[in-house]
Length: 324
Image (cartoon, rainbow, N blue to C red):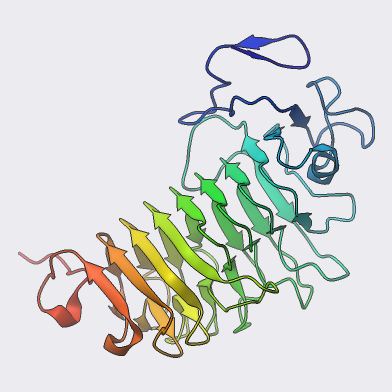
């Protein structure tokens, strides 16, 4: 049984639809974008914080504090609409929108046009931080702000989250997710969009080593995720590596779908667009597959598919159109 700051008792955590607010020895905080800034201490619904950044300032590192978002309106990090740099460890961020979704989570964490040095809605470099039932949505046009979520943490977990960026669709260095995490885990997430047409060799997931200083994609797992694209560039890639050491040890995609919209005018060549064969890690695709691409990856890039080939080894992981 959990006791909240306002005296409410709950058995088994508060339901969020397929997930629960974590039970913890730490503190529970509430964020409600409909209240006035600076009007509360965040400890009850009646005294909720307005901005996610206020909760970030309040949580204690390594305390497993939980931040719960009201889902009635879009949440911002701060009045300046800047990114949230999460450097603290073992905190948990939960959207209370009801129902666990791939798309359209009712808690929408947004980021419009900013100034300064922002790179994403959230830049996480802490240890053991988790995010559940949240849509990360960036429309920032700042030159450095090329991602919706930037992960350089350790043991990060995103569950039932959507990651989307509606700007920089023509920037080859942009991506929805910057993946520099160590042992990060993405479960039931949707990354990308079938709506926004990308016109350059961008990516859904960018692996570029040490884009976040000192951080690299290492032992990262994607499970039951949707990677979605709509592109007019045949060099678009769902997963992009820019160097031979972007993956360390293992990068696993388990039962994931890589889908390029038929609305896209390009014939996209590859799901994995690696500039060089990975020399420090192996990319493994276990089950799942791709739709509307020429192939999953180049033979030379150290990408391995675990599952029955549909036709030949060269087309492992490829979908086949139904015929009668």
